[in-house]
Amino acid sequence: MEKYTPGQWYQVGAWVEHEDDDVADICSCDPATIGQEHIGRSDSEMKANARLIAAAPDLLEALQNMVEAHRSGKLFASTINNAVDAITKATGESK
Image (cartoon, rainbow, N blue to C red; front, side):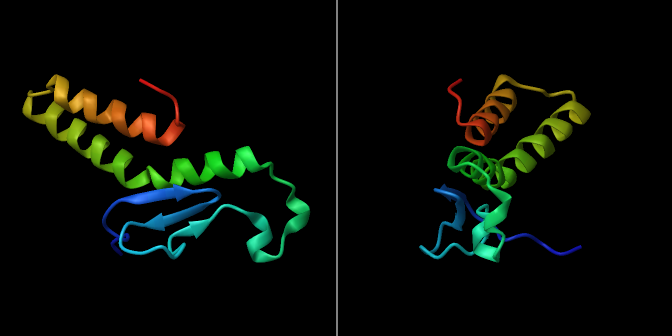
């Protein structure tokens, strides 16, 4: 299986960037960037999509930690708090 780009991903407008540079090297959520201006996504929808994608590594890690904690019988509040933080990053809503 291929590995994804490690590190923190950040939403910048409708783009998802990697922490090491300022190039939108993960993806764009703006259909116009691939010649599909007719799709007509709103600015807020494109930003919400980018925010969700940028949170993907955090969400994956939180789920992996929760599964491991459940299997070991050691599901601590810190595990749940990390999951809440990842959900907050994905949704943009406060805790």
